[in-house]
Length: 88
Image (tube, rainbow, N blue to C red; front, side):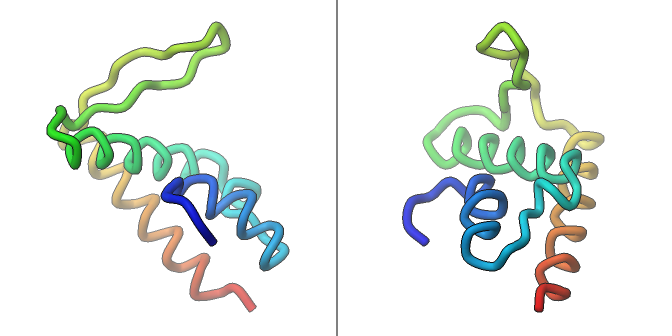
């Protein structure tokens, strides 16, 4: 795997390499992890803990990561770890 797009790795790269995609397994949890990854990138580059929700018209709504959002992200990250542990 190359590049730094975690959300794409656990979707298309894993599907190609291992025959399984976390996005196919749980699209909602994949979306939470994608949002977590983008918020992490924002913080890592000196920005706020935010991500942009995707919209059908492009762009997206800016969302701040608060306690409620972070709990959803962590729950999804735990689900990803369990899913990874069960890949055969």
